[in-house]
Length: 281
Image (tube, rainbow, N blue to C red; front, side):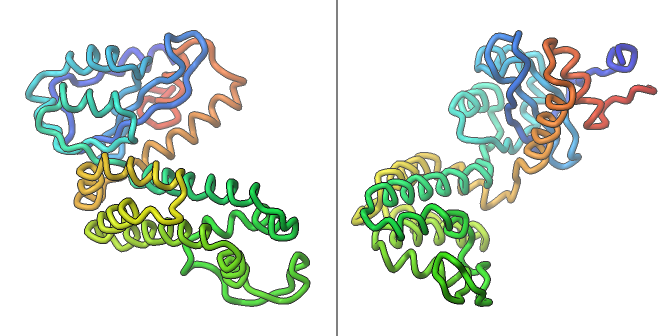
């Protein structure tokens, strides 16, 4: 493995027009818990893996690339980790920041789920409380995708569809209904790639505030803060799907190897699994 790894070199004179960047939980003996990975969005290839994701380390690392290479980068897709935004602004002067779709959906999803838990815990009706706990996954789904075929449900003791269950829960709590509709409206805007609708949903519900939960308000304020980078997401259609898939592979590597203690060996294994290097090379 060492022989093939010694041939692995990153070209410091070239970077692609579109890059995806992300972090993953690393080995125990590094400074900081997270390492950094970045990929060529078009070629769907990992470019390199960096031991430390912190801003100083990444600034030092990317400063080794030529200015021409860094100026070639037009889009960088990422999550809402603020040091990454600082990095792009200082090191990639011509690049546009694109927030990853998955992280935007996850932000609103988490806010809605926290709202559901808060409402559930405030209820005195034990039957309704149980239903809110039992059917939480249905409330997270995109409403048009819910099944309309009725079947017998022991919790209700009669036949109803998954859509009926969601409608029942929403009818029992106006606060849940308001926040559910915000969540669903955002999902719909993203699915239909409609930025103007997305922006209007955020603005409208930030100004309205009535029955909008504190968790959802916090999420909406975050979306407003990063609206320009979200607009870039709608315009570019670039996502971090490739790297998210890689992160699942990394978790699998750590499980099957019962953890790595050495970053270099861990990096080699990731590059082999991603077909960047091969044992027979």
